[in-house]
Each structure stands twice: as structure tokens, then as C-alpha cells.
Image 1 (cartoon, rainbow, N blue to C red):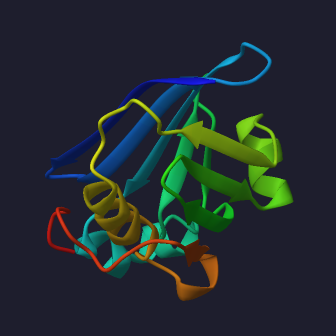
Image 2 (cartoon, rainbow, N blue to C red; image 1 turned 180 degrees about the vertical axis):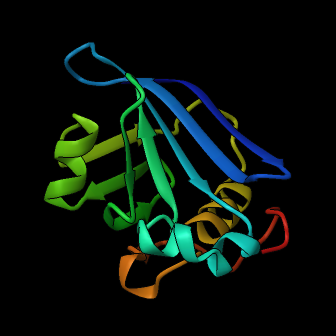
Length: 141
């Protein structure tokens, strides 16, 4: 597996973390982890639709909200474990392993961005975060 791209972005609509890599079977994977703004948490329409939490988008335009059960960061990889309905909606395996070796990404920055994006919105939709340090190098929440 080789990570081909890993990046972060912030704009007036929220925050985004993107990863693109090739898995063990040679399939090119792309995932975007996103969150909105604090104003979105007060929007009754967003709340009624369940859009008041982070979301994950996959290749093909598939999107699921609050779909991760666990996120683990080690020196070598970022592991994303999806709730069954999330994996099905995104057309991805239940577990996605994003290799980090050779990417040059700063683990503290990645950890900070993951915390800021995934700890936003409905508490019951937030994943368990393993191996993530206190926010650092990420935008203010």
C-alpha cells in the first residue's frame, strides 16, 4: 500500500481532511472527512436531516454522516473503522487503513485535524479516537 495524497483544507464552509491511497488489492481509495461550521449546529433543517455532525465522502460522491466507530493513529498508519451502515453507504470496506510511511505528514498536525473534524457535532456520532494527541497544528475549533 502506498499513500498517494494526504491534505487539509479550511474555508468558510468548514474543515476538510483528505486521503487518497492504493489498498492491498490495488484499488485506488479516496476519502474526505469534513465538518461544517458552528452555525450549522444551530440550523434546525440541518439538525432534522442528521447533518449536524462530521461526514465522510468517498469516490463516486457517496457521503455518510457520523459513520465512523473508531479512528486509530499510529506511526505507520491511520485506521478508520466504519459502522456497518456507513461502510455500506460509502461502498468501502468496514476498515480502511491509510499507510503513512513516506508521506512526510506531521503526526501532531494530522492528529489535531482529526480531533477537530471528528469531535464536532452530535456526541453519539463521534468515533472512539485512539492514539491521537491533544490538538496541535490544526485550526481552532
